[in-house]
Length: 73
Image (tube, rainbow, N blue to C red; front, side, top):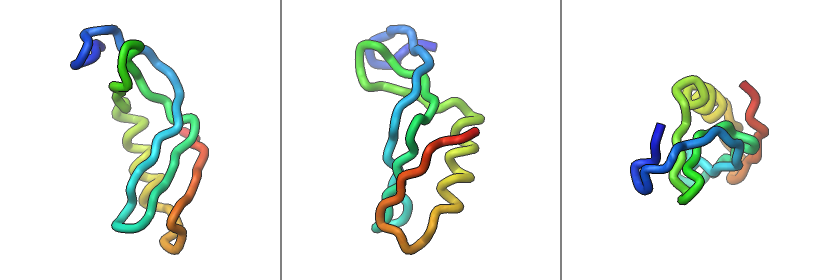
């Protein structure tokens, strides 16, 4: 795959990403596998990872404003 901005090759890496859940909650997923451009911050989540992210976010505690979760496949 290539970056849509720079045209550079996207490479697998791991990173921490925030996700807004509802109006007032943020979940940070740590050690999330992504494919990322080496020239810019552009990244993609592969389909299986995105499905797992959806599962994780659906199960977050409703009372917490900020939650940090280590990604596990």
